[in-house]
Length: 194
Image (cartoon, rainbow, N blue to C red):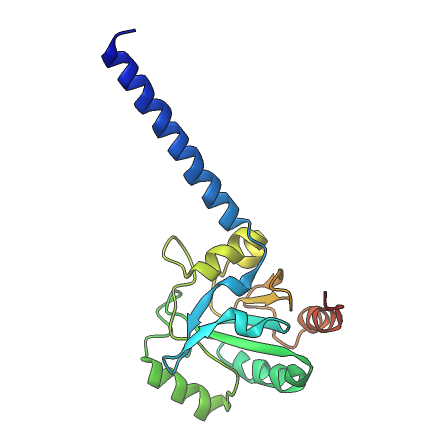
């Protein structure tokens, strides 16, 4: 082998090794079973680390102010009020991804939610929830739950367990106070802590 061939061979081996390490790191982070490593920014502009909710069940819902499902805010608030003392957090994540139905500013969204639906549960700043530009939490949920973790429209719901695991997801048509969601919340809240 000439020196040139040896050099190309060495570079090829190094490139393959680097590619292998990069792919392994991507798979490891995508397979991470814990939502607590992700951070949002609140609708008020403050840091909102998911780790603050460790030990609590969290129902994460991508929301929109001008959607046919916007009325679900009322049931989300009722579920939050019923279960918050037992450790449930409802987390609203405004998004303009579907039909441009959340065009407002953070101030406008917050005012709408508070004055129209008396929302008191925490909300994040507006986020992208689908595709390659999705917030890292939503990319993780998609990896963890497949279609159940992938919003296809506004008011998709994802339940995170007290340990940070992705438990289940429901499409927009499933109401927040449906038997399926309430049963899953009850199970998450009754699970032994470990």
